[in-house]
Length: 537
Image (cartoon, rainbow, N blue to C red; front, side):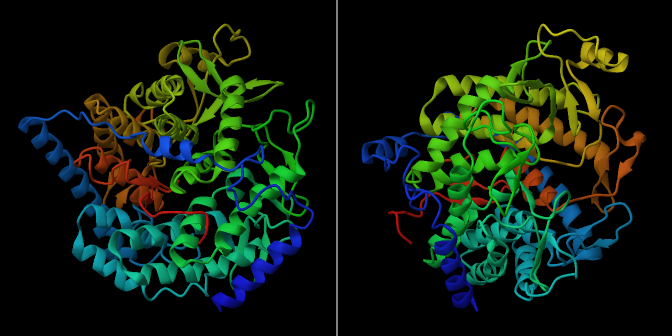
C-alpha cells in the first residue's frame, strides 16, 4: 500500500509541478537560486543555543527537583483519570469524565502524550500506552472528516518523537502508515492539501468558507514532520509533498502593493488549494498563520542548516514582521498585532505568544543579538497577559492601544482595562494553551536565568489552583475571576503534549531534551538534531 501511494503521489507531484518554478529543488536552493555555502553551514553548527551557565548549588537543585516532581504528579493525576475513564479516546471531558471523539477516534491524547510520558520516566504508563497504540487502525475513523494539519502535528509528530526517544520501531511503522493515508489529501491540482479529509471516503473539504479554502498554518506545518519521516524511511515522497506547498505558494503569488499580498514574506491567511492563490486575511502571527512561520526556521535547523529556501523565507518574513506586525503599546511594551503596509489592527491572541520563544531560538541559531533583544521585549508583553491577571493565567484574545494612538474608539471597559493591565481582554477564557509557557521555557534554557523558571512556577500554581478537577485540568471561562467564574469541560491533547512538557522541562536538569540536541515541533514533540542530512534521503 505504501509503495503504491508513494508512487502515485510522486507522479502527481511531477505532473502538477510542470508549470511551477524550476529554481527550487526540494528546498535546498534559496530564493536567490543559491545553495547553502559550506562555510555558513559550519558556522551555524558552531552556534550554541542553550546556556552553559545554569545556576548550581544543592539548595537550588533540591528546589528544582521538588518542582519537577510536583509537575509530574499533576500530570499523573490527569493521566490516571484519562486512563480510567477514556483510555484510547481522543479526549476526556475533565468535568463530566466522558470520553470524547474529536480527532478521528484514534486516541489523540494517547499518542500526543507519548513523549511526555517517556521524558517523565513513567515506564509503566509508557508501556501501557504503547500496547494500545500498536492496535490503532488508521484506515478507519469515526465517520467524520478531520483536519489534516491536526492529524500531522498530533499523531504523526507524536509517533515520530516516540520512536526517536524509545527506538521502538512500532511507532515509526504507525507513523508511516498514517502518513501514507494522509498523502492522499495532497492530491489536489496544486498539491496544496485539503483542510479536512475523510480517510474512509477519500473526500476533502474545508472547515469553513469555500470548499477549497485552507489557511497558511494548515498548509505550512507539515515540513518538519515530513522531512524527518523521509529521513527515517529513506523515502523522499513525504518531504517532496511538503516542499511542494512552498513551490506553489511562491510561484503563484507575487507581492504587489494594493493587493491582498502586498509585503514580501507577510502572507495572507487564506489560500485556495485549486489555484494556489491567496484569497484574503491580513497577515499576523496568531491562529491560522503561526506555525507556518515557526516551521521555516525550525525545518532549516533540523536539516542541519541545509534547507536554504526555508531560511531565506524566514528572513524575508522577519523583515516584514519587524516593520508591520510588531509595535509598541501605550504601556511601552512591544506587542504583535495584525498588519501590513496598509496599517495595523491592535488585536492579538495567545497563539502569537509562541513567537518570542521561536524568535529567541532563531536569534541563537543565527547569532543575532538584535533579534534576541526584540524577542525579549515580546516575551515581556506575552508574560504580562498572565502575570497581570489575579489568577496568573492569561486570556485567549486581547487587544492593546498602540503608543500615541487615541483611545476614543475603545469602549469604556476597554480603556479601563488598558489602564489597569496595559491591554484589554477580548476573549477572557483560558483553555490550557501552552504558548506563553513555551516561550518562557525557551528563554530559561537559552539564558540560564532562574527568573524564567520562577515565572513558569507561578503559572503552574495558578493552573493548579483554578483549573484542576477530578478528570484533569479544565478551562476557565474568565481569567480575571478564576474558578468561581466557571469552568470549561475541555482538555485537549496538547495539554499533555505541550503544556505539561514545557512546565516539567523548566525544572529538570537542563541537559534533558537540550535545545542543542533537539528541535521541538509546533505540538511540542522533540526531534533529534543529530540525524545527519547530506541532501538526499
